[in-house]
Image (cartoon, rainbow, N blue to C red; front, side, top):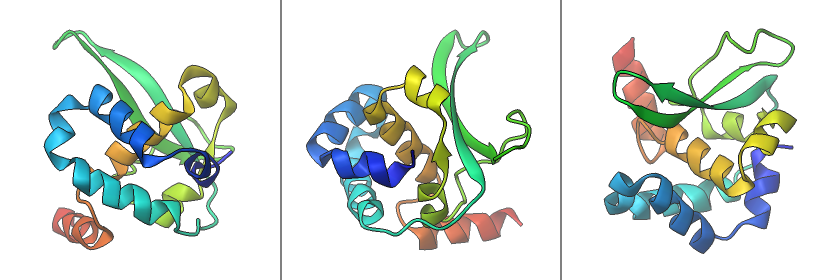
Length: 136
């Protein structure tokens, strides 16, 4: 399964409610997430050999639990991961979602966590490209 299949089954109103539950501090930016949702819902995915990885992490220092989202190469070491922060959105849409992820997280949570990660550097790909260039 890939994100476009999940996105086709979900309406924004459901995503919005769950997103605010998961990321309450992002409520002020919810309109930006809505724009991203509507954009990627109609965007064609690109071919990629990457797999989405979501895992719950417990941070002992801060005594918090969070979901870490990244990707790895299909057939590669799942511990050798790549960030979604500066990836093109159509590439993220083309990534496979493993059965393990779908057994661990609800489809709605997968959408919310992935969308949060892919917009970490901005709400459009131009902002993300600028962020990426500034890293170099």
